[in-house]
Length: 199
Image (cartoon, rainbow, N blue to C red; front, side):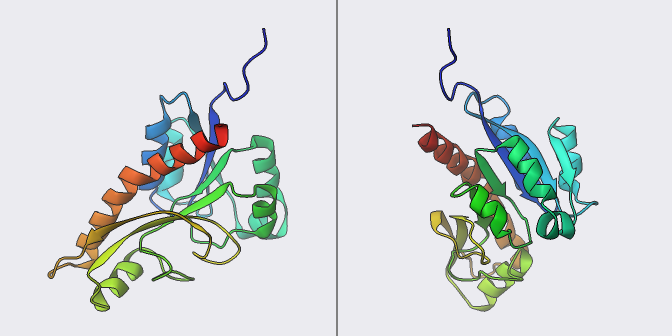
């Protein structure tokens, strides 16, 4: 009796640079899912809290430097060994190399804490985004989940959702609203993408 195709869980790999709250949320979301598992977390910062969180949740935690990503093919080789069904950038701050995008076409996605194409690009992340949105007196902000290409925040948008900006909004209070949108929707969008790829 042969195994049905796709009967084993899909494999998710996460890249993150910071505390890893989104990564932790995604790992926990899929812990008991028959559909998928987070099998590895990569970080470009040795001291990033995300590596400890992954380790504590029994997920392989891997640190790499700029050479391993851009000059040598070290990161690419590890990814080729894993053969992930989806590569998720969750607060990863370096531009993703073409050689990985070419090896995994339409399998690399990112989340951005604003409504792209506004407030995207190099250097636009975290508090800087929320400060810009508030200083511009926008009435709403939100999150964008998009495919990754070789330019910051310019890949095809997969999903967006919005939140209202209050008159007395601060970057900190807006950040909390955006985090709640991320925690709710990012795992669900990942799940939907993997289900579509399974069909």
